[in-house]
Image (cartoon, rainbow, N blue to C red; front, side, top):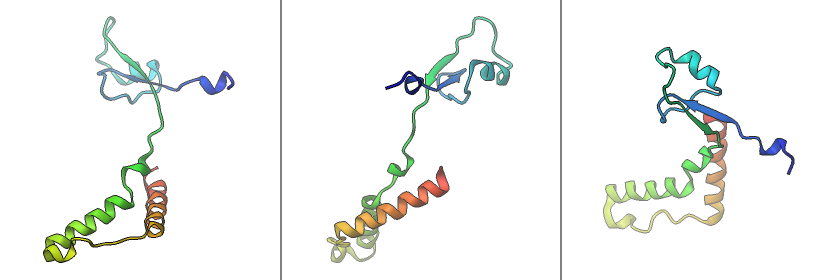
Length: 102
């Protein structure tokens, strides 16, 4: 692995909660209330896989729960979805999240 690949992007915070500045200079410019001696925090950015926040299992489970709420035990084993159908729904959800949430 080259040294370039090991460089991590930094992120900065004035409160150890909201890391929304890419450099200390940006943090200082955006926070007029910081004074000499105040503590600031430095973190490392990492990718968030937002597509993993929802998957076919979540949607299928919700469908089953709502059907159960409407009709009771009749819907207990519904929906019975094939692995292929789950993969198709996962692909659709992933594409939608990538398009609209990235």
